[in-house]
Length: 264
Image (cartoon, rainbow, N blue to C red; front, side):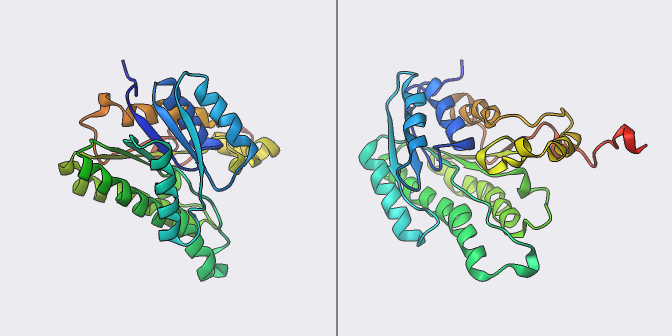
């Protein structure tokens, strides 16, 4: 039976969306949880309650991972260890989309995307890996990427590039950390319903268009990501290293969508 009993996890960006879904799935699987967000907010209390309903410990910490990288890493790492010193799972989920068309992109906009989506992931993982190696802890790292790391989208140059970097990081850190007893894997959602993708619920034509691009014809809630994340961080995946699991309804396997019958 796949479970996370006896483990404790920090999940960055976990008050809503994919991060929250993973946190609740981890709690249901028996892991203690440290939730993280940029600032105190009401949805943190709701996410804490959802985790604690499964009988596990759950705490909440704050820190802006899109800010100055190393001070932000110092803050989040220190708060996480103070809240739960036994953390042995890190889920790097915090990320954002901050794009404009490529010809309009400026340095600060791209830098902010990379500070959150790439640099914070790299250095927070490094900080935990150092602690785990020192304490001889068999740590587990899960990077949350995106289908955008493999399939490009117009006007998403910064985001797509940052998520491509996550895929490369999964492989690179796997090679370096596996000999030290630390597993690194990734999970890449396709289009799922989150606050950042609320256009799916506002625009019926857009939702239909995305369904046409997805073999199983679904645009599900972010809850579909939970079970895959649990598996990748569980003992059941002890020999799974350096892999990116795409949870996308088959979108990444399809060369092009079917033409709607009305167009034929």
